[in-house]
Image (cartoon, rainbow, N blue to C red):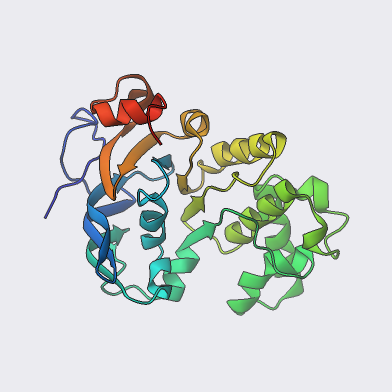
Length: 269
């Protein structure tokens, strides 16, 4: 079994070692779509309450890897996974209840995917599905979640109007509020700003920076500047492998692998 790449207090970050202190530990993960292999021996330790960025060219496996962390790939026919993913000391593929896992590990997608219902009902949907019916409790969850997504002041007077009437950036922040409402520990983000204008992108980036006080965040991004601005650590994927994983400032200033440098400087990708 491959050991994890992670930062310890006693060793340099790029060293290969194991830790019990990571929120998410990924061991020798391989993923196949039928006969086609998409991930090769991925081993990472993702730290709690940090932003970890996954970068790399299109088709390199970063979104596929992201979806293994809450078993979204289970929904695709013919997918086979070997290796091990441990979140809070529990192997999520061995024993984890998938509904419980996706409550603990929320996800925000590339494009806002709000339901055709009110802003309030979008945010309250998950808690209601968990059996929370008390109006006062739901009101508190909705307000707390929208505040946590830094959009409460913009929508507090229109909670009963359709969420689909919001701008793209506002819709994405309501999607984040909907994830927060489930009280996850981890939030996965798959290119959450790629469909947004620069001003909305900046608001979401500021939100992500605030959110890491409370959540472990893993984000896929094609935007090198975004990864440099908001992440604590960065993993560079290429052809289904993790080529390099380190503190973000190290990845962008003094990468160890020439392929990482070539990608970051725009020589390919």
